[in-house]
Image 1 (cartoon, each protein chain N blue to C red):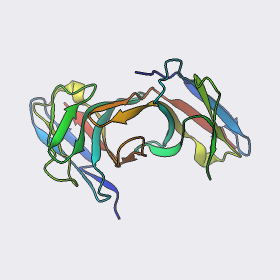
Image 2 (image 1 turned 180 degrees about the vertical axis):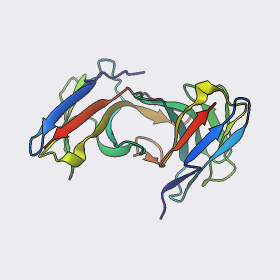
Image 3 (image 1 turned 30 degrees about the vertical axis):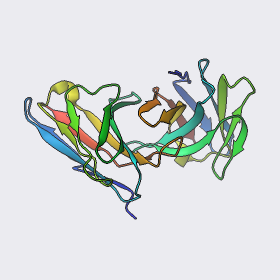
Image 4 (image 1 turned 135 degrees about the horizontal axis):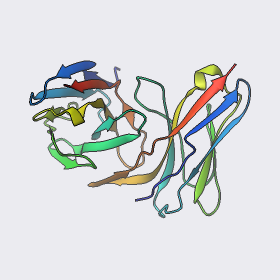
Amino acid sequence: LAKTTQPISMDSYEGQEVNITCSHNNIATNDYITWYQQFPSQGPRFIIQGYKTKVTNEVASLFIPADRKSSTLSLPRVSLSDTAVYYCLVGRSMDSNYQLIWGAGTKLIIKP
Amino acid sequence: NAGVTQTPKFQVLKTGQSMTLQCAQDMNHEYMSWYRQDPGMGLRLIHYSVGAGITDQGEVPNGYNVSRSTTEDFPLRLLSAAPSQTSVYFCASYRGGTDTQYFGPGTRLTVL
C-alpha cells in the first residue's frame, strides 16, 4: 500500500496561492492521486484527482511530475473559508480489495 | 437528492452496550464504506461493501459488524461498546473504481 507524507500544518494569507506537497514514493502503476478537504465536524469532500501531469478544475490544480513520487495541490487566491484539513490519498479500489490509506492530512490555516 | 445521510448525529453509550449506526445513500452507488476518525487523525476504514449482500473488512474491523441487504443502506453495529470506540464515524458511498467518495455528516460517539 502506498503511504503518503504531507506537512502537518501550513498557514498563509488571504489572496495568496497555496501549494501543499504530498510525497508518495511507493506509488504503484495503477494508483491515482486524490485530494480531499475536511472542515471541522464535517465529512471529507473531494477536491481533485489525477494520474499524471497536470489537472485543473474550478477550485484547484494538481501537479504530478513524471516519476509520480510526489504531487502538489495548488489553491489559487485562498480565502478564510479555505481553512481546513487537506488529505492526499494514493490508491485504487479493486472489486474486492479496497485500498486507500488516509494520513493525518495537512491543517491549512488562512489568515486575514 | 439527500446524498449520504447518517443517524444519529451524537450518541453516548455505556461500556458493554450495543447500538447500530445508520447510513443511507440515494445515489444508487454500489460501494459503501464505514470509517472512524479519532482526534487529529486521518480516517481508518472499518468495513466496506461492494454491493448488496457483499461486505468485507477494512483496517480496523474488530468490535464492529455490518450488513448490506439493500443498495441504499449500510448499517454499522457495535457489538459491545468499549471506550476505545469513542470516535467520529463517517459513512461514504461511491460508484466504484477511482470514483469520488461522498461522505455523510458523521456520528460522534462517546463510550463511557
